Amino acid sequence: MTRNPTNFLGTEVKNLYDNNLNWVIRHLEEGSKPHSTVDGKKVLMLNTNNYLGLATHPKVVQAARDALDKYGLGAGAVPTIAGTFDLTKKFQEHFAKFKGVEASLLCQTGFAVNQGVIPQLVGKEDYVISDALNHGSIIDGVRLTKAKRGVYKHNDASDLESVLKEADAAGARRILVITDGVFSMDGDMAPLDEITKVCEPYGAMIYVDDCHGEGMLGKGRGIVAHFGLQGKVHVEGGSLSKGFGCFGGTVAGSKDLCEFVTNKSRSYLLSTAHPPSVVAAADAAISVVENEPEIVERLWENTTYFREKVQALGFNTGNSCTPIIPLIVGDPGKSQQLADILFREENIYGTPIVFPMVARELSRIRVQMNAALTREDLDQALASIEKVGKKLSII
Ligand SMILES: *Cc1c(COP(=O)(O)O)cnc(C)c1O
Image 1 (cartoon, rainbow, N blue to C red):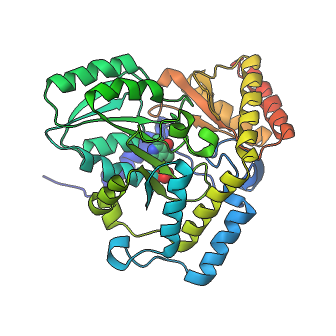
Image 2 (tube, rainbow, N blue to C red):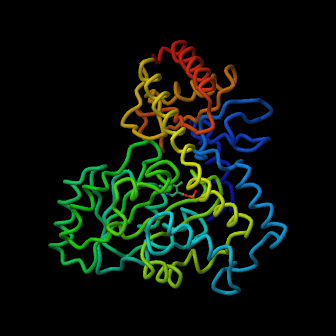
């Protein structure tokens, strides 16, 4: 057999380009903030997870600078080998208190939490049950388990109950139920109150991945705080890279959980600890959310205002009830055109989301609100979206 080692790379890439399925990576020439410079253009950004504007908050940036001066840059090793920083211990205690739980653990990323933790929680005698629209990192984490797998209809607690019954009847040793807190493509929220109620009689372990919910829900504390379910949700996975504007992943819950993850999660054990400057920044970001609750309030004021206005223009925002507001266009080509014209002609940066991230007929631009956007910014964005939406006959 004649074998070419790398020909497939070019073929596959060409295929992606031919089908408009390739990602275009743009380059920011300033920080991630509402008014930034992207590919040489001053644009209004409507597509970052930096919901509270903390990535450029002076107190967050100063904390990183101070830690950089004191500790230098890299951590030097994975935490279990050469230790981690006093800053990390302080952050973990602070974050647990903020979330209203016993303990927390700073992990590499939200992605790494799912990769590392899920496969340790369940084994071949067990069942893992997922929401049908869970994030790809959860799906990958589940793929790493040897547990039997069940899926329930998106946000449907009664369908979850029928899958729980199956798992119970199959004699599962443990049952793990996993859901996103806030779903990143639609901006809807898991019915965590119903989920906990349905799970309780089965003794199922509940794992919520709240990467998007943190910073926005429950006064910034996330979906568990939003529903007042501290202690009833057993594992909270999170990210410091979104609403908190920094970088990293978190696990929050009981002391036993955090000890377990420290000793078992392969991504925790085999990947280097955070740069201390990032840890200091994350600690400062949490303090900002605690001390300046008006930032979270501003995020929600902007969300309500923008959602009402785009709906009035005739856009379909699906089931969005959070600062993630999809403008569902339907046709993938038109979604890309909408984003492209907004960027080139209107200096508005919104991201088209098409297959395979969402179903083809649900192609969209995903708008994400930000506490740092002014009313003027929102009105400017709305005027541009109206103009281009009409031009493309979307509205
Ligand atoms: C963004 C996201 C992740 C990944 O978090 P990172 O910290 O960016 O790695 C995991 N799960 C969900 C639900 C997310 O939205």
